[in-house]
Length: 237
Image (spheres, rainbow, N blue to C red):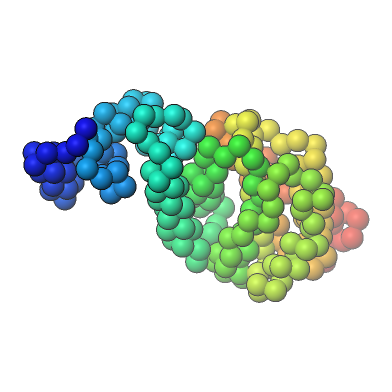
């Protein structure tokens, strides 16, 4: 339906309510849609998207990308995908140079859970840190099931050294939501820990994120066990 003068005024009023922080959640969706869908009444689409999201904005990008909604076409999907990537880049830039300690683990978990939310493939990421545990680089190193062919421990250590990093945190997501590590996850983590110790680059943690929560190799004692095993074989160098 074409917008009349009242309809155009409606969008203007939405903008004013947004500025005054008096806007409802579905109206925020409506206002966003107005930037890509011109000259049409978009309140029905906004309400439908909000309903399909169950009121949770975390689901909005998945709903728009993967659900058929009357009046929502290719340009709208591109707009929201662009918005999603912009948000991820903004959060990543905030994340880089943040001093990381084990106490800040929840920040790392939350950042990657948000970034990986709704992905149907596993992504593998590495955080490189300096001597003061300051995050230098956050890098995606692979996509797919975590395997020896996907993650080359010595290549990761080499990249860490090139970046001037002294420690690493490995992160990957489980699209199934289940965060229990597989045997392969454990093997790769151990190999990366041993490869790092040889070059004085410490693997601080390997974190698996999913909708059910997260699993930390550090919190569950694996890193300590790897350290003890390494020291038994090579000595505490």
